[in-house]
Image (cartoon, rainbow, N blue to C red; front, side, top):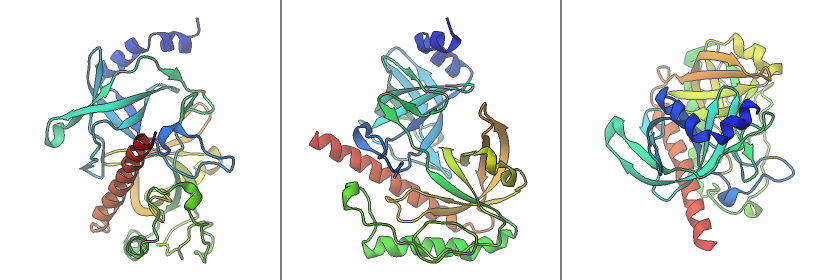
Length: 310
């Protein structure tokens, strides 16, 4: 019997082994309530994925540490439906679950999830897709940062642009996609190739490359980079990032990050583990955390409305 099939049939044992090795699950709030798949033009959403340690297991529940971003816990409410991923090497298994409660305070906060009845193995070429769910990784624009002090005006401009849209009432939180206006494309910095609707102020940077946001953690992010663009990433000591969570956040969120570790997957994609770097502009941290919290709140509201109308 192939190892992948054997593991699928013995998924409870595999989950227990992940826990015993102080391993983690990846969890996400589906950006499309009801598990809707992206349209023919490709994904118009981004699913945030947190990698969270498994705290405890029993026959009916999985206890995980509470997800966080930049040192702040995300407020996930009981009853929230999640998609969870168990990863072993290059293989992934996905399942649906639900938050049933929370426990602890401070750094020991944790969430209880419903133990699934079955799991489904993801295809190697579509490693976040199963027959009943698909997670779409947010797009990230990345630049090697040449002068760290130059991020200050760029991040101030990013904050001002997002807040101006939110304050004007033009931001889209959780309206049906049919009501969303078409994106406006205006001038961008030379060579940036950005498709945002803001005039882009860049710090002093090298050539841009793109990535996808694999996961989010308390102290940083994980990116997956296509082999064709991995050369630029290998040489960078600091990166300036713009994470696209539109339309719920009206423009990509900019931040600075420092590479911590890398590895290649079986398809030669480069996985890049980054730590947030706030020392050049400490005031920007609170803004980034607020926007991620805003995104999470919008997803929870959309799910509650979907459940109420179903």
